[in-house]
Image (cartoon, rainbow, N blue to C red; front, top):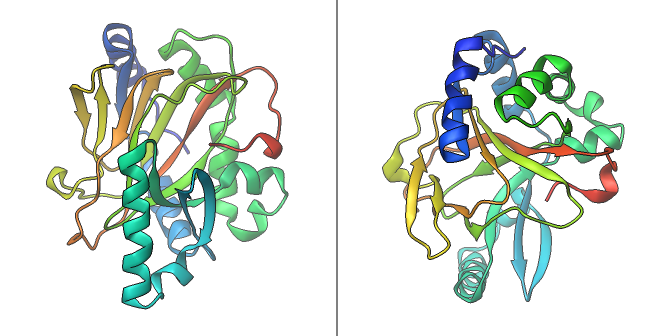
Length: 247
């Protein structure tokens, strides 16, 4: 399923050693990318995630999309108000890790179950251990993320005690994304200055060491395309299972 060439991984390793982040192009075979995108189109239910009153919320994405305009505008206003106060996010997700451990992924989306298995195989993890100079990596968690108009993720560093996150990864699936649409992965200094921007590129694996301040810029309200990726962390230690979640 993966197409991790020695040259591509070596280039990413050089980037990682210099900047603690890097990218591998053409990460999936063309056949696998097409199959995964087709499987994404058939996902039965997406979850819209955000925070309100300091609490994480899992909402039915289709139901939220169908809200009357005034009601949805009020919801969006509350989300933006929370973003002005601190960490906030708004995007859609399909939790591969939780569904795999819950025993339902293979039935709901067999191709995505195959992808999750590949992410936790030696064929993927061994190159990642070498690329990141991190032999302690033992497993990958994963979720599908879909950013649509108005979606965003404010600055954070992924460093959560007990999660044992060695590095974060974003495997972009969708093609043709443009930088002026938003949805750009930005890396920042502690003072908020942007040091580098990764514009989403189809079939590109982006990696960065944890902790590291970063954000996903808001997707413009006029954008009709979806920014679809497999995102997660490469982690050390024993896989704790779904009770630990992927956030």
